[in-house]
Image (cartoon, rainbow, N blue to C red):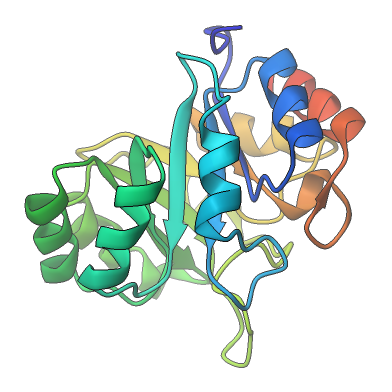
Length: 217
């Protein structure tokens, strides 16, 4: 099934098995996210990721979530897994984002954590070099994970704001909150991970279907 065109596009991040992938395909998502970060319960080995990526239908973009990954590891990842978009979810600088784009020739999505007004300037900085922005909730200082923590931020901070590249809203979204989040922010795309899980790293096909339906309003 091709991704749905009505309502915001949906990305389900942290897919780890075929059941979750099939649920994403049935729901008509636009993106599936594969996580390459050993501290995450959603982390995939390269062989496991390659097996999943091989059965993603045309029309659904395969996104690799990486965190401060060096070039050698990116080379290995992209040599093993067919990826459409690189998602940078660490402390990569704008210069590093531009470097990765130039070296690997893939669209780059940069996650930017938001907790307060002082964080908004970074969106403009990264928007000048990335192909897409992921506007996410800023993790606590002591957090093990840079995302997927189920945290939200004050969506009013970005209400009516636009950037020079496409963007996606993330951060603690669930089937109960996504419609309001889209209404407040005007988000053209939304991303969810923990909000469609029955346990950390375990995607629930029913929650995926309900989230996508709620996102479309």
